[in-house]
Image 1 (cartoon, rainbow, N blue to C red):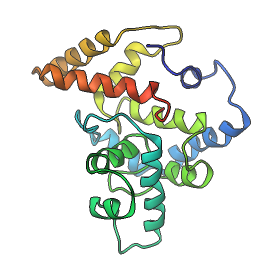
Image 2 (image 1 turned 90 degrees about the vertical axis):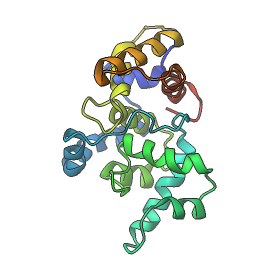
Image 3 (image 1 turned 180 degrees about the vertical axis):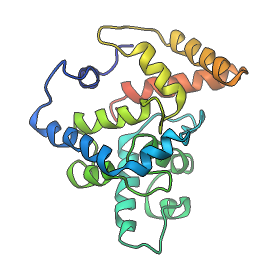
Image 4 (image 1 turned 60 degrees about the vertical axis):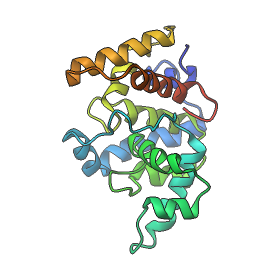
Length: 212
């Protein structure tokens, strides 16, 4: 596997300059740090996605878009919350997507742990609702892989192990790394099917056309 090159260039922090379309979203990085302090505090206090948050599905941007647009609509209706019942009634997402995609939105910094839009999420809804710009996707990747969350711990470990410019690796290596990480951090082994699923989801989140 070779990670998405534009994303990897952005992740390299300075290897290339973003184009004009990306610049406005990358500029929200400072706004995100400035205004989402409570969200950052939640992550630093250990509130982050669990190992099986994905429910065997990779990150799917069009599905997350539906979640964000609904969250924006409900933001003006404070008496209503973004729960699974409303998501089921107001989107075309399937039963498992209804659980997984809001979690991806949280891990990607677009929703907080109360399913409210973050500052980054509000900028994305207004400036790039389809989450197509490289700047948007870079920020989503950043949050998913940040050392203290909100993304899952294994995501950060895989990114820092495999994602550097020019590196190529096989899925089997990712499978083994996930299994080893769980054993090291949790002190127990998970079923091979579980760790392989996490590796597949991780890779799919960067290699599928509708992902990152």
